[in-house]
Structure formats: C-alpha cells, structure tokens
Length: 150
Image 1 (cartoon, one colour):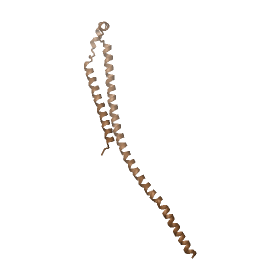
Image 2 (cartoon, helix red, strand yellow):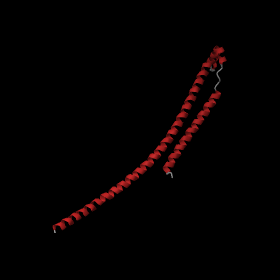
Image 3 (cartoon, rainbow, N blue to C red):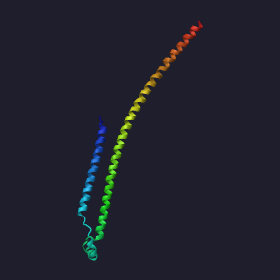
Image 4 (spheres, rainbow, N blue to C red):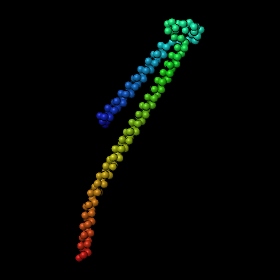
C-alpha cells in the first residue's frame, strides 16, 4: 500500500512526464507545419539571380540563399528536437531504473535496521543479566568459602 507522500511523488512524476510528452508532441507538430509552409528549393531560381536580388532589395522577397539557409536551420531544429526526444527517453529509463534500485535499497535498509534493533535488544537483555549472574557467582563463592572454613 502506498503512503500519501509516495502517491504524491508518483502523481507528480507522472504529471511531469505527461507534460513533457505533450510539449514534445506540440513541438513536433509545429515543426511539421513549418516544414509544410517552407517553400521548396527550386533549381531554376539560379537563372534569374539578378532579378531575385532586385526584388529582395525592393520588396524583401526571399532568394535561393535565404531559402537554403532557412532549410538548413529547419534541419538543425529537427535534429535538435530528435536529440531532445532521445535524451528525455533515456532520462525516463534512467529514472525508472533508479526508482527500482531505490526501492530495493529501502527494503534492504528496513530489513537491516530490524536485524540491528533485534540484536540491540538481545545485547541489552544480556547486559542486564550480568549483575544477576555476578551476584549468583559471588553467592556461590561465598557459600563455598563458608563451607570450606567450617
């Protein structure tokens, strides 16, 4: 049975994972939408570079180098997004492994503390028997010495 604190931690952990998953899905959707909007590279644009440069200067139209740069930036963003997804997945696996290890260690610590507690109780009981046994030994020695003196 989970305690209230463990339930809170589990709920928080699951909530964070769901939030990260939602954010990654949203990011992937936006990147896909952006890729659909980007103009495709057109090899014919090189024939009218001068006209394109004039239109860029006058109206701010994109030229082939601008679109190539935009595609390169987009590819880099996609690569980084894949790295982030991979990293989050590895962190999730690592956290699950740590959770299992911590659970095993907590059980072991609980078992060992029980053993130590029982040993301490036995040691204390034996320590309390020392004065009784000492008194009994003294009585035996006294009785032996009294009998041998007679």
